[in-house]
Image (cartoon, rainbow, N blue to C red; front, side):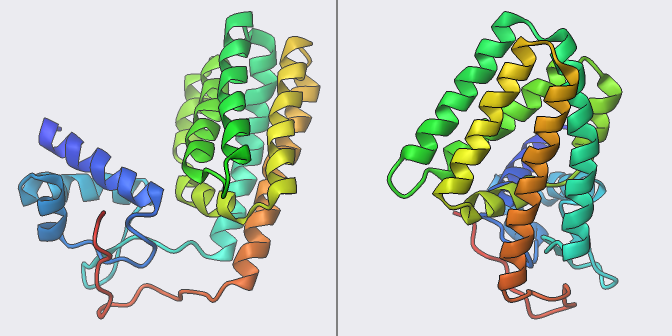
Length: 231
């Protein structure tokens, strides 16, 4: 892939995951090319990569959209996260170093500060939550596990989930991380796995309850959806 293709891929992907390109937004090559400052060919390459990652969907009429995940898809995503990340936590408890525990604690401290910010700093929360969980995958020392986890599309859902937590839920999530660090310090794989399982299942139920209250966006149409302007 060219540098332009990589840049377009990273730019569009970041916009989707942050919510700047919202679910059901039609992705038009010419508008994305202008947004990224590249020609349409790198954008076309980027969209193919994003489609393979299930971050965009293409209709029968070859229109490309940001997907809106169905309740069944959300449930499957979190089920797979439980299986993979509980296993990663168990492995990480075996291999984690004191320095890595301190790195994890640093991310969790930033998560705690984000929770305490007036109005809640969701961007900092999500960013450091991602770093926390990704570091656990690295510590687990399994390329196969990391690749499987990377195929699960949930980062856009994480932004939506974070906004649905109340203060009690946010503090429980933060406390889960603290307890996970205790499990790592104890080198207890079973404890680490159990904490991670409960942590992700709680996030799933927060998301599922929020989605049940929300108006469904429906299926991706073949026309009439205009793109949300990128900011």
